[in-house]
Image (cartoon, rainbow, N blue to C red):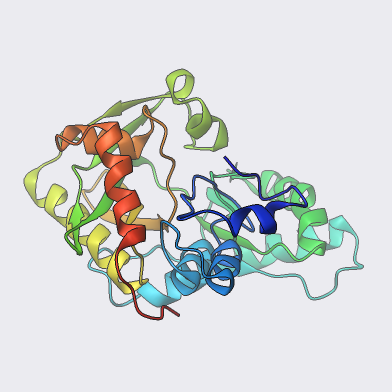
Length: 287
């Protein structure tokens, strides 16, 4: 196991046959690590530079898929800071006004480029929204962008895609039943304490088919490779909304991708082997 944070990482990674990427977050799943491995000529698992960058940056992914994906994309506001020396209160007031002019409350606020639902917040009224923006202002002054979306109550669904024989195959959709309001960082890191998985998700056939098809479409349109996972919400009216696509979903034996694979008759060891095989496939230049 290699740590990208140690000074000797580049020397160590040159010696490997294949880099199996079991890593998440900025500088890991956003195309930067993938670009380094491309420059060093080291084969690696997962998507390439462009697909990783597009999927990680939520505004770019939304623009790329909007109008092409069968599942609609929620209205959203992209918050960027152009005056980094302003006070946190000035940040918050401007962004609160912007969001309130565009979206109805409650809303979800999250970083535009971050993994594992880090810094995901729910705001039900103007004061909560202002407080969230005030809290996130320091990271925004450092260049972190934010995305704000309507908060939709409904069924949280995920669908993994695994390439088998070069073809993207959807895994059985999984439903996450939350014990709280948000599928946030804590829920994803410690699912046993915050949620329950149902896989295959007990869905009506039309919704099951829509989620599976949308996951494959997102995988292909974003240019993903090897495997991915897309997340959705089905609201109380049965409308399915695409949320995001993860190019390096977690691979723990009890995680959602492994749970979906198990439901498809693929045990954890076989899942890892199949992902590893995609890194060894002959590939031409990938953007």
